[in-house]
Image 1 (spheres, rainbow, N blue to C red):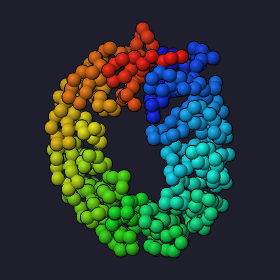
Image 2: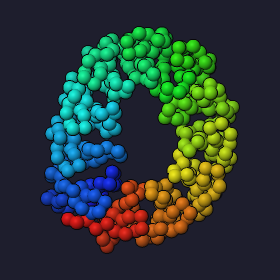
Image 3: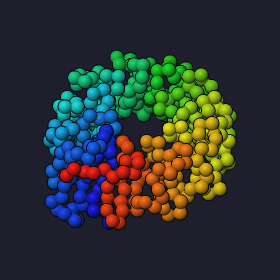
Image 4: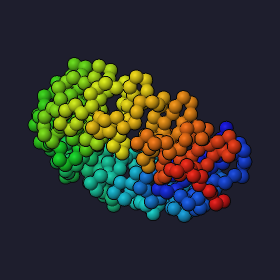
Amino acid sequence: MHEYEFLPFVNNKAFIYKDYVFDKNSHRICINSQGDVLFELPKGVKCFSYEDEDVLFASNEKGLYALIDNKGNNLTGYIYDVILGGMEEGFFEVKRDGKHGHIDICGNEVIPCIYEDGTFFSEGIAPEKLNNKWGCIDSKNNIIIPFEYEDLSVCSNNRICAKKNGLWGWINKNNDVIVDFKYQDLVSYASRYCNAFPAKINNKWGLIDKTGSVVENFVYDEFEYCSETGRYYAFKKKKHFALYDTVKLKFLTDFIYNEIGDFSYNHFRIKKNRKYGYIDIFGEIIVEPIYQDAEEYFSEGIAIVKLKNKYGAINTSGNVVIPFEYKSLFTSHDGMLLARKNLNGGFIDRKNNIIIPFGKFNYFPKSFSNGFVNVWTMKDGDFYINCKGEKLEIKL
């Protein structure tokens, strides 16, 4: 059993908790990447952070949340049911006593917790729910879209996806109707460069443009997002998928794939006849579908694949860069991969050089974070090591 809980480093900070089974008065501390203790947490409090956030999130024994700064100062008090990470346009979403609102990075409640539900700010407005109807407010809590809709989602280019009488359409920030309310479903998010958007009528999907004109007829059974920007979608017809480009307004492949994955390093993972490979942004096959398994995303230019029950890795050209000799293989950060041969694990680099020998440690998770990973041995218990395998000395 692990006596301590070592959380991953995020933004060059990490939290260490001692299991109360062992010590009721144990340290609960935040350290930096030099091993210095930045601050100690009160008893019963746990803290965490998100990448690229300048503040931390804490919860107490009652399950209530607070925003704290990097010195451990409590900015809000433990008053919130939840604080959602991922600051959007300067605000975090919060809930207090079941009501939705927003706070800024200093902990000020700039939008009071008075709404039944809500989402994040986008393009200067945020959808909120009041009296069982949705509308939109600005950052000063002024009503921009009246509370008269069954659902709302902010799009790009002054468009808002709205639901009325069970059907979806588009409105603008003046509450003018751009596209009539006639769709069973309508995709709300896409970048400003996209020229077509998935919509659903009579249980079939098609594509419309920004004015509501039909770009692709409503003949498709389903679709999958293939990029965060909304440029690429995979449409399904008669059990097979094809890749569509909403900027070029055309299908890039035929309907021949069992699966098409997300965009990564100008590639999409595909599955055909139970085997995996990759195609490029033109729909051309870059890596033939010959693998038993394959990562959906390339990480630092490589993807882990499985062949003849062994794992290795390929680059974006499909060349094998790590031979197929591992029982398991996981991408990590900082140029490392966690590899296992038999029961022993170690870390290798992207040229298959052994960085941390197999079997040196009894336990470690899959990934380095900010240059460190938590390991455990029978002799020394839990501790952090760096990418060279050196122990981080914590200055308690």
